[in-house]
Image 1 (spheres, rainbow, N blue to C red):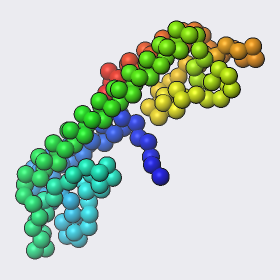
Image 2 (image 1 turned 90 degrees about the vertical axis):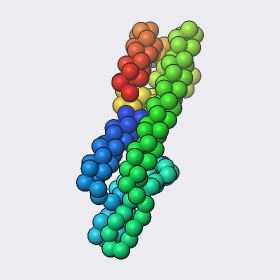
Image 3 (image 1 turned 120 degrees about the horizontal axis):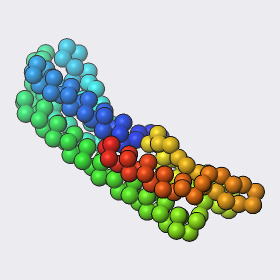
Image 4 (image 1 turned 90 degrees about the horizontal axis):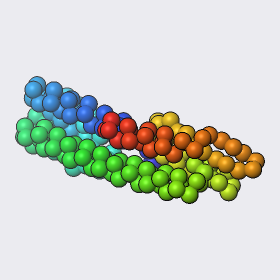
Length: 164
């Protein structure tokens, strides 16, 4: 099973985690394992769930792992990961803008497949990002939306990109 999280949500999670790491750093608290119990903590879980390298810093119960540089090492990993998330999202959005422009040049349906009237791949793309979507379909049996839908969807994606 895999869960799709939109880039904005992921970036917000990363920013929150970096703030927490900085807070732990000022208090010289351990990261990776919870102080008294040595149970894996939420920092380790976040990194593990994303297959990111994690550096431990633990000082308790006769356990000594890593050193205080672990905070900055993990923050650097998260900053690099943020850049990858943004670059990947930018590429996906730009590719979708190109698709919308191509469809516009051919006056093809968007939102529903022009032949089958089944949802197309644009709908889940916008839905995953919680973005509004404008339909444009012209068939003898169905007229949906306006021809301005292409440009409105491109504008929505452009605004979304700027918000990252």
